[in-house]
Image (tube, rainbow, N blue to C red):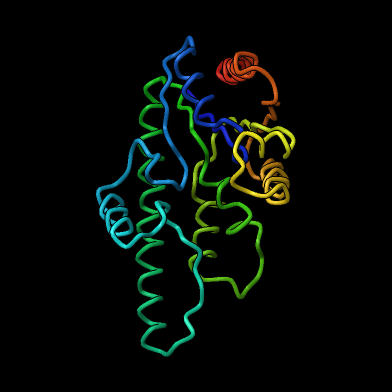
Length: 221
């Protein structure tokens, strides 16, 4: 059938809306988390589970692709840091490919696959839009993979609302950051087949109804 990605800044209600869509769609539909928060993932590689367990023990964040910073305290530390970065990037690329394979399997069996978030969107500003030649090699490799090798969903739906509304729902980021994220997500329209913007500053039922209509229209096409 097809894949549909729901993206948007913090506070847009991505997970809630995605699960409602899956529950109410009249077509066979599957939910798949496609974001960086591993604790929210409903599917991951065994190697990623091990990496997450190690990060938990060390008090690290539950995301996988941490920002890569240059090592500046000696050659040995730089080599170790580079090896760790390469290992982390390799595993994360494998994780992205694995989830895409699962999504493709459901799609060719006639399902609508609803992505909660999208790797391409999460890393667009950091790994695709940036052109700085001094940025880490891992960022350049990941950006090349996402642009040229990663399969884009047939439909991307941006869940949007004014930054003040998003902040009121989830006050974990600044208004400036939320506005920047809104701009970043809109730029993604240049690299995906089709993007629709849905206003989420209204009742959940109205938002879900509009998204269902967009998905059914995409399925007919």
